[in-house]
View 1: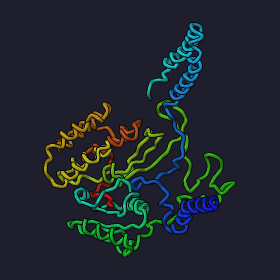
View 2 (view 1 turned 90 degrees about the horizontal axis):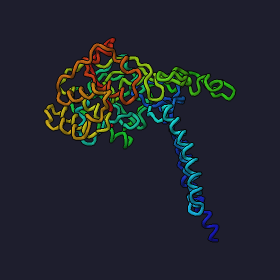
View 3 (view 1 turned 30 degrees about the horizontal axis):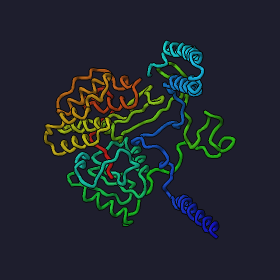
View 4 (view 1 turned 60 degrees about the horizontal axis):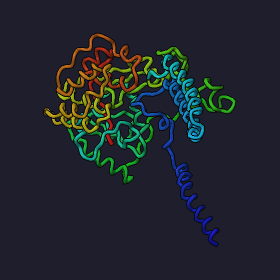
Length: 116
Length: 304
């Protein structure tokens, strides 16, 4: 009985959420005409769709950020074994970071960090 | 004219017609702006009404609400709003035929209006076409839109045809010139209010409008603008806009912008900077640098 009541309650709540959407579609006479669908441009009009490709200029910087953020992830397991492994682990991580560091210097030279 | 409404309690001027209940046509408008006015009206959400304040109603409008130029429109606007909400006055029908700008239904393999990514006119409009990006020559989509003549952030009457890639203006053309100088003494303050609104300082803009409507000098306005960082918010490459805003707040004369054309200055600018620069010119300068074909006096604003 409890389960049935819960089911009915859930269906009632669902219907209360969904029904208004259907009711809206029933009476929208003149409310969704062609002129209601175009963006407001102060009386002006557009000659093409707004769906278009343009250049996100911070894109290379974003990619670089994600790459170096992932590099940080490798340091978590390293930090767990660092204490027992000692100087050898430090040297290995030093090599890893310095190779990536060369990458940063290269990206810098290529102007990735310059905000456009 | 519409600046007088800045002080009226219960009336707020909206930036977009989509937020308004009543379209208030204040002052004379040009014949060439009729179609823009119709488009603007049809974008009003229902229930809607139009009030003509010192303006001649369009001939095919049924039962227009007219207000004489010298009258105070506030009581009439209130009554109109109340009647609309009570249902005592019917909502206005569209003034333009309800059809897409181009025929598209049933065309293409799925009736979507065209072929592939670029062809056809889905929903009656063509897709954006490729063009060279002016900064690095990449072939990206360029979109052409006409903004104005009744955009609140632009000088009244001015409409610009802009080709945009992202928010960078590739090309600009003056579609219709701004209305010529009305000659009222408070014009610099109204112009300053437009710039302040663009800078995101609406209460300072309202203060400037109220000062303009009263016709007195608000001594503290320049100091308040300085304190709120309105002048510092304009970057170094907009130093000319900063100088003109400062002059407008003091109701003084702005430095002469030279003979250069407005549209040449807009190419390569980003949206916000371009709007700020356009809003900063006084009507006399604007009619010189943004060539005027048939200047006529008048103002348009919308109220809710």
